Image (cartoon, rainbow, N blue to C red; front, side):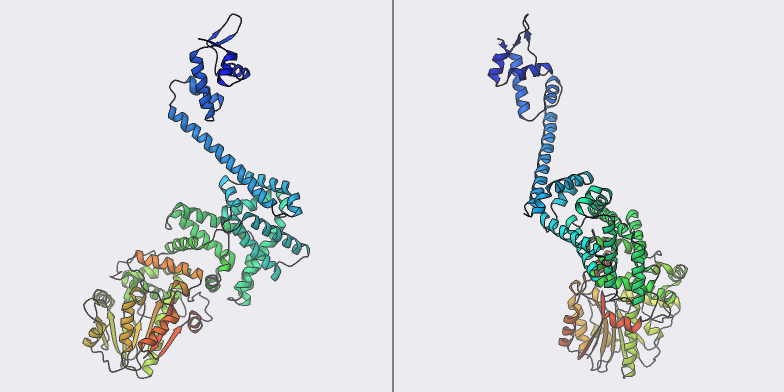
Length: 631
């Protein structure tokens, strides 16, 4: 049975014109044509038409339907998957259009006459954004974290108006008003871009390259220049709390003269963040090169080769989080970057004499480097190089500069100050009649071998294996063991400090001075408490000097970064930190244990005492503290 075209159209709910079009494009042609040219459709044609309608209902375009029906070898799964992708793309486009309209509607719903009149400007800016930004960046711009987009839009409009007015009134870029505007500008940029430096860079490039965007937004090169100068002055105003007037002016000069750094920093931040998001290890050559660039840009931006100024700058950065304010900079990025820097400045010589406790060898190497690099030395130790052994001493003498980077100087400052303070306080105790000194966890410390007072009885307490390693080092270096020194090997799993000292001849009825450095952070809290309780029960006048690591909550946000990096590094070497203390709480605990006088030394106090007027950049940070407690 054959159907004429009109009958077929009526049965299938189509128009004759549609069937003519199908015939013209080769999609559905009649099986038979009469001599007069009439189209007659048979059963196969009807089946094909049903298939055409089914595929069309699924969203297929007519050319795709024809190719699918005419290719007998086509995979039906491939047909469906292809159409699924088409539909998904259409859905995304529809969603994208919907979000654009919603974004525009939110701005228009503010209700002001200006907003209603300028909707075409908003639409035009959206098209410019689409020209310069990816789809993901457009979504991020429409959905800023923590704020509604219309709120950020209102804030930008108000801020741009204020900056424009300030510039028209010739407000100086170094004024308090300009500085306040620059802080708001930076924080608003971070909020608008979701702290994405790539997006921030593209938006700035858009404003530089698109004259129409400058007209609509009111932001052009001159405004960026003014804000940049104001931001440089704002940073210097914070730095002035930590630098001398001359140093502040040097930083200001570098900041203003090197305005190109304003673009270099976000570009470098974007590269570092990209490697971090990609999962690139900090020790990877790519990341190591970026760490070198970061350090060079820091020197170019702030301090040049002035080590003293560099140390002060780093201390200021640790105390003032706003100094690190920038798009893309957060705690996770800083931890990643510091890990790369730590690896970048790892010792270039692998010691063959690390012993059973690598941290003890590391401390000894830094004390020895202090004798070669830092003049005058804070800790004068003529035995520091000898006890390392010939190979390590020769390697250090050949390349002492490997310990001259800021990270090494900061660590060395802490190590030499803690030893110097302990030795100064021990000398003071000796002058007041104390004749016993106990060094807990002596490692490769040399105090007992250069101690000038023969009447001072010395006791070195350490793990048996560590102590034997030290005695081997002393013998190889031909450093004699003083007659007043007793070794106290103590394995705390099988013995106690009290038992070990008693066997070595320690007199519990006489006051003693205890030196306990570089140990507390590696012990559990209970072991620390037990040791302090033992000292508190010694004769009146007994004293202990020890160092400890403060809790993260006790530190400014940016000091937590090097703490986390150092703790992770030591844990990877098999020596994890186990205890942290809040200074005031620890002082109270010492009082409860029976100590009559407790003094917690602050970094500022020790810097004034040992590092004032130095130009070599040695200065204490704030990760560890020193405590002095007397029974």
